[in-house]
Length: 366
Ligand code: NAD
Ligand code: TYD
Image (tube, rainbow, N blue to C red; front, side, top):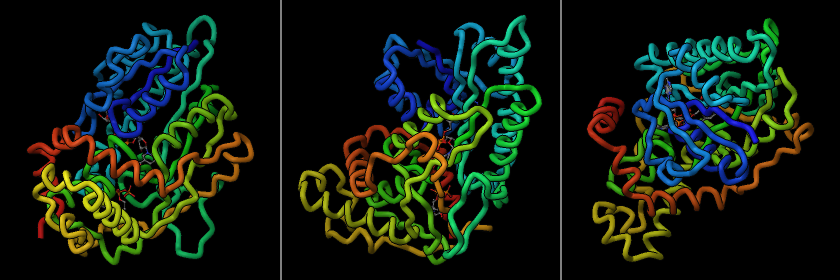
């Protein structure tokens, strides 16, 4: 039995990870530390709040003394660090929060972990797992080989630069102080509880409101998409079998141009409206979907500044060393995701409040 401290556990991937971990490691205890920023949502944890092995504490990872206290109070053995500002577009309009949370927040966690696990009378058994992204490697052309763990970091957005910086700090705490760290660099996730400012949930919720589906630039930018539970599974393998001090790439081997992803989601939404006539009553605003023509909402808009052209992950090391392979196919994962949003209207309506609307109006004005 061990106790995990999961930072950012009320966010998209963190919440899915908590559900995954409680289901697959019933003997372990999970403590979530989350500041509940605009992206944090207790509703994503509602089915586990009364679980006997689950605890939620509200707090900021930048508060090192608080983190130290929780590491001691809960006798934490494994820290899994998801908490971050995660949206590239927000990092372009307001980088400050990214520097604070992603860089200083990670530094604060490392300081607390060193103090509790290494600086006492005896070194305690521990693991610090840092969740990073493929975006730290920069951008690829259509023909470049995929990123490996040896690809030099070349981040291009304030978001990816802040994540790269945190990755370096994690690495340094291992090399300098002997902290037992691992880092995973994962591609774009999709699935339940995804905040609707990100591409896939934005498209689903916009179809339901008959709003334009904004495609940046020419829509030919390529991302590798992984079902979120497969990310949780990959992190599980890294924590339990990964070598300390190493980075592991996690990816879906599933590259798609943005425009093709959006068209796929449109087709799935149309099929749902076709198969389930009650959806027309449930979502009276979704008039393009009523006509099986969601793709008519596709609208090309001004490109994101510095938009990375292509990300692709080579996860050979993770496969060879840990036996990692995604379990969900894209076909089943994306269909499940569309169904989840149709069945969980309360969840996404609650997060699309005033501040969300202000963000959308500002981001897509003109
Ligand atoms: P998210 O934005 O959905 O969630 C972030 C969570 O962190 C929220 O619950 C928020 O309240 C919390 N948080 C933010 N600042 C905090 C602070 N100062 N103290 C405590 N909690 C704070 O993000 P996500 O998409 O779930 O991403 C989680 C992690 O995975 C991030 O580190 C991100 O870089 C990484 N990642 C994301 C993707 C992706 O496709 N979303 C892919 C690869 C890696
Ligand atoms: P996003 O979900 O923001 O993830 P990331 O930028 O971390 O990859 O975006 C995924 C891709 O979709 C990215 O290339 C930007 C593009 N995109 C659009 O074309 N339109 C949009 O409205 C959004 C939010 C993203």
